[in-house]
Length: 347
Image (cartoon, rainbow, N blue to C red; front, top):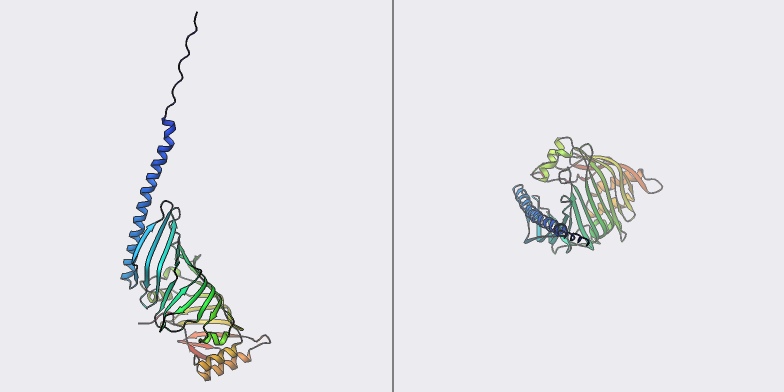
């Protein structure tokens, strides 16, 4: 009696072997289609934004544009970039590079690897070079959107024929804009270890010592800050009751200091600042004397302001006083020391 032959082993189906690779190829193909669609959307939205800005009086141009970053990023490179707003302020850069990850398309990082130039309406162009010049932009649906600028080891050089710029260099420059609760927005700025130009007023006050600046403020009624142009947006914001609350600020120029821990500011119908600041002044008599000698403040007014701060000066050579912006004028205590700063030009 012979034993029966065992049944032959079943052959393994190859579908289970190839299925993961097939699914991977399908996923790659699907992701590739999505990425190229997203690249087209990014280009289309840029073109639409530029057209909208042009209708509002802004001019944004570039020589050529490259979009890349496949598969996980969206990279945009613009050569010979220029952006100009209606009042004459402008930014120019030989090259701008922007990057966003596909999983966070609303967060962009922008860099100017070859430096940039900002153009002042009256002062002319100033070229800016540095070890690092970059910015970030996100939360575009918020008001204000989140924006940050960071510059490290910056050098400032006015173009031939342009007016001098207050600083020739700075170790660090930062500016931040953030949305807050209750329709508020935060504005923060800082300049560390700046070097004043030797021919400028700031240099006469600071000498060879560094200049630093800080600003921390909150703006109310940010939802009303809308308009096709900067003056229009400021007027809408002011009409809605918008104000700036200054939490802290300070300028240090050598041994001289102006600092404030409180203040509330607005904008008048003439486009100039309104409001008052409670300030601490150190070495103020010398600084006011320099301003009077250079003609920044009329000499009689500078002398009167010196008397005010000297009367309030303590042993640490610091004085407490109020700086008021009213009716287009800036006053230190009871003494007018010049026009109030302009926020926008009235046309």
